[in-house]
Length: 154
Image (cartoon, rainbow, N blue to C red):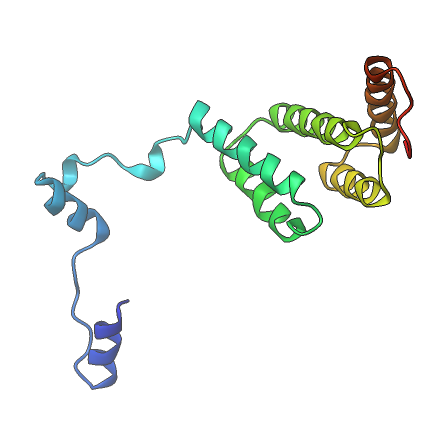
């Protein structure tokens, strides 16, 4: 109900039935309302673009932790509403967590703030401690091999 309908009703004018959204769409398109497809019957299928956008948003939220923690629930709800397969989402989580670990060890020092960020990300993504430790150990070993020295704080 629009503002003017509410105002009209409060002034005793009753309600004036207006066109439905389907009728408005049909008028805009210049077609018969009965020829429009029924949106509820059309299954939603997320495409490559939707997945790429969501993955980009995931990366932004993860990189911004802990400041972006409040956005996590909306991000998870968006993944469910877009119909992303749980296996695909879990794979994105694992890849993003590994990249977060790589960024943490890139300067060869893992600070306490980075540890807290990794732990928060692990918790939000539902990654078990053992798996997170294994990922950290593997990335640290790779970094130490590459740099030829140790990674402090890991």
